[in-house]
Image: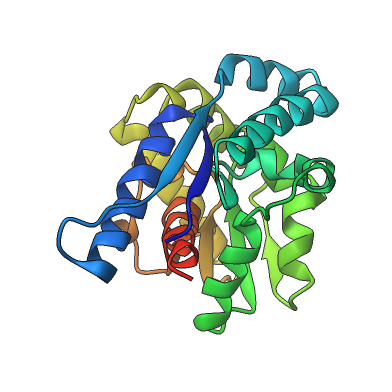
Length: 229
């Protein structure tokens, strides 16, 4: 079994989901008392969020690079960054590592292709929805990506940072997300990417008929399977 290097804390709420899912998958595959071999480096999300809001991606790349190098030194065989948005800095990290990074968008593409998705909606932080670093990976695989309008993007982003990252779950916020998903369905999307690892804390497949692709679950499951080779 390979050792998984987890960069977490963005936020710690969803990192807990990663740890749970990874260990559940490992145990399901191997049985008995088996659990995952992993090393966790948890960053201070306040520092990361300040970098994001001030557009200082270089500083946040350095923070994550140091985390990745620490995990590599600790014996990790590959890296899993437990967030969508910070995959923006992956190209700046990879050249300095001797171990691979399991990219969340690429793992999500695998899940989309399994269900023959060609037109998909993307929910996430405003950075993930509005910038190209994430969408382009999906588009390169021939899948059209639709994002909510500006007002809805702000609603989604505010709920993530002001509620979900703090472990606050509100019914009104859940209904707001579902209303936005309904709007996107009317635009002809076949499914919805929950492109922020916290969104799965608020909504899941039981809440809507349209297929949801929860990136935290997808990423964690793929990490566990990759660890088993």
